[in-house]
Image (tube, rainbow, N blue to C red):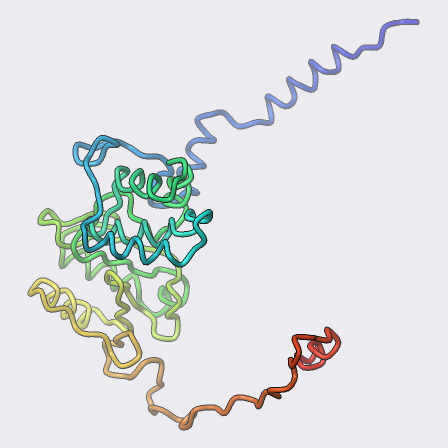
Length: 271
């Protein structure tokens, strides 16, 4: 029988695939854009190398043990996120690679497992940030309500651009995606706190208060609309929900004996 043209077919397919695949340079550039403002890999700097010393303070080791006590001994890795957060707060808002290695040692995990977490969640700052880390929401509701004006105001007042830190190390500005305060747009997250309903004027007031070391305290509901309103109330103030809602009554005998009928559960949940 004549030989089947298998090798030639494979060669043609390989050449076709090569033509369709992007170059390594193109892939790298696409990945960098997709990763946003931070690279997914570590770059050594004089103050941030694997050899740089980091350890938790005695006070924070008490917190470390409290965090680990929430999980079974063989599930220490469940504490990676809160331990990284603790390390970042101790280090002044940045998370050095040495701190990641310390967390890996504490939870008895490979360092790469901790790097995966730190490089995935945007709450972790793997490069140094200022004392006041300004995260400006630039997603649609905030943009429509004037976030671009707020950004220009911050940049002009501080003399920095998006992604930069002031020379005195006081402020870092970073435009981010939705922070979930759309009803009070435009807004910024300043460290842990939300300042909402901003205007260029109130933004300057906020920056001046931070420069004086006295940022405005949060309001009753854990945020601070800068226009005087309370939480998400509209211009007419509170118009509903004057009383706490009454929860539905639960039959205390329903699970007596520990036996549960799945059909009853579905009926109770309106399935």
